[in-house]
Image (tube, rainbow over all chains, first blue to last red; front, side, top):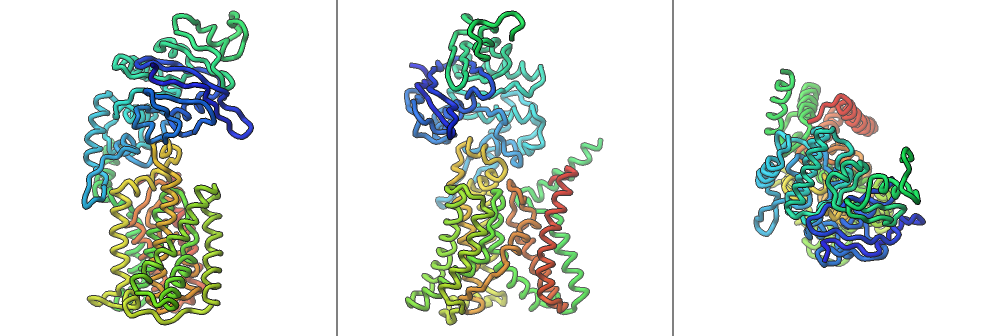
Length: 252
Length: 328
């Protein structure tokens, strides 16, 4: 059985059908690239998995358990983490608070629970060091960090709680070449640890560098789902833009 | 290096003020204001006048603590002045008509305010109506309802224990001051040391991130408006107890003063960061300003103008600071 199974997932916003019955699987420890043009439904699909949106129809199973009736907190608890394209950081909070956002360490006194700032700082510092991220102090305010550092914080948050599946939405879009290599290395490392990755990216070179399978989404439907060895960049581009035949030279 | 030189006072500042996160300038403003008033009026620094200021600050302070939570979440509650009046009236009427025990009266005031706040929160989260509009509507509805319940006339005669909450002076200090201090201490701990307070600020900082990370944003916002209403109910109790009456015209324009106190204390008008300590300093600034203008026999019409001007000035200075990249 696959780690993540989507069957006939549909989602509409008013008259707009963002997802028209999406079906695909993600095996444990595999890297699945999800590609498609802007507006193809990639982000909607991912937010449906993470519980931010409820699907109108269809089923999402994770580890054999249906996710449909779960909220984002429960879905994170089940082992699904997402690194959002906008990073989803609280810019006025420090690094430690961001890494533990939604999962704060607490201590109890007379049945009341208080945030354990020290435990969070210590654990966050350990995680940042383990990832080799260049963040000076976990007490720094997230909004004052560079873009690359902010992404490190978002990545640290996704990996701190032993996820089984990490969804990355355009993780390399805003990065310099050297930083892109770091992210691709990280994806390979997650794979060796048995953690599945869904990689959403416009950069097909990155996709072909790390993915096991490539799923192409167009107008809310899966129109191609191939192992990376059985497809080509030209074929993927053709699927993305909706050409019938693989694109001719120069057509991409 | 200039960078190192700049970061040293920054870290010291963070260590000293980290948990309270108030606007340091507000303390200077308070001190300067006290200095000026002391020079202008010999009576200003007398014990009885200082106690007067603290007494006058307590009702506004309780309202402003509620505003601190709501504004931290990038919301606004303009209904607190009216809810204060409605709560006081409801509490007094229940006590007068049904001969209830005084502790029930206290709970009734707070519950009435909390109920109005819950309606605000429900309409903001389920109705998807901007908080500015919802609470502006409640400002009208709650005031009108208070007038309808009383035919526009105050309800006199509260039981002695409740009057003591407004007029008593344990150890020479007016009892509302104790209520304010206790409320502020609890609110400070809640805002800085609990998930409830943290999430209020994170919702104001980045609402979609809060939602994505599993914060129940709608439920939390509803609780924040309910809290603001309940604190308005507590303020209504203090007000009614002080004047020994449930007055449907109580708390007129108090929302203006409460929001101003909150903003000048350093709570970010656009959400993300709040400080109860700052709010209390802000409330004291408003109290000193009003008291000083009274001592100088400035007509109260001018006081309204002064409060409004201070609010706009505080936000304007904030904008200038933000543009210059100066951040605490």
